[in-house]
Amino acid sequence: MYLQRTEDLRNEIVGILRLQGYTVTDHAFHLVDPGKEKMRNLHSRARAEKICRHINFMQSRACKVKEFMLNSDEVQIDKIAPRIIEVRANSIYVDLFRWWNLAWWSLPYERTYGRQMRFIVWDEYHNAPIGLIGLQSPILRWNVRDEHLGLAPDKRDYWINQSMNAQRLGALPPYNKFLGGKLVAYLMMSDEIRKQYREKYKNRETIMMKRMIPPHLLFITTTGAYGKSSVYNRLRFNESRVCEFIGYSRGNGSFHIPDTLYESLIHHLDKNGVKVGRAFGSGPSAKIKNIDRSMRLLGFRKGSSHGIKRAVYLFSFVQNLQSVIQHNETPIWEQRNIDELTQYWKDRWAIKRNGGYPKEKLRFRKEEFMCSMKQDWERCKKLIESNLP
Image (cartoon, rainbow, N blue to C red; front, side):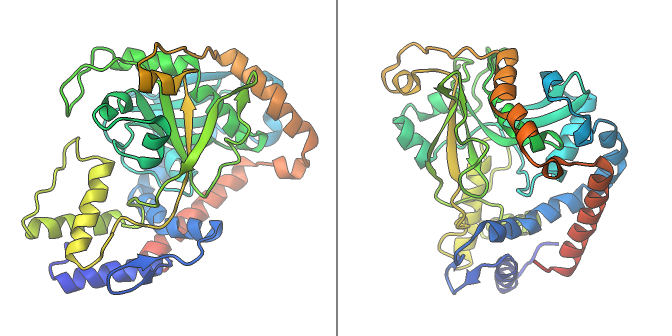
């Protein structure tokens, strides 16, 4: 049910922002010294909303997910054999990707727009998922990325349409205990991902500009959820840097506006005669714009400024990325096959972690994990029902 009165809608916004820890004044809201724990709490309501919306799915697929789950002492590091599987409709991987995407991350997923590719990194030896890679179209304008690459405004869409943004990137238990997140990041930059991207998007016309763009995947961007990421630090392959930290985002987004509240904001725009697009072309950038416009009508200066500045990372598939973009040079492609990346990860990271880390800290039991998931779902329901942060 949409809130009809402007005063009621504004009061609803103020209440939700305060529950998340924001200080609210007449025209603005802000965070005071947000540490990592506070930032996790900020996302808890948005995540709980997603969990509650899909709770029947989560419960009904739990047994199937458990079938493909290992205890930590079952993992043989030297036998891990990753395969990159694109998640396609009507396959078992659809439910597995969706379940873990909802359950595992404290940062709730956002709806994907435009180009989208989802992968499960699968361990063929152990018959279990190692991690997820979720790629989607990046936002068109992003200062930290555009300034780093020297993107000219009139060429921006051409180059951005040859990139993707990783909304999901990480390892699942128990592989995360053995620094599996680094393996998943390595494999995201493999020749296989680039090949699958090329096959999917060759001979495609862009929706907004109606033009053909080369099906090259030049680079991928992603962000650290709570500051700089230990997963991406010192991430090198054969002495070459796999990714680089390029700065911080400005702290704009939409996670602090729950989906139900967003619908009320859209209704408010419509009531005030503001046209709102719902098709592609009105993706994440348009959602932010809609939040700003609607909250400006309600007296807030900048509705999308949630105050969480995320570390931004750029992963390049080419050795001369900036020269390609700025001077139209021919790309010099990196060569990274799955077997070599995997062996490098084992030697550099996993074997050392397994041999030199306290066993108790590496411990993972799937029975305990599934019990903790059920408790988590109950907490999510209580959070939404009680409106407590």
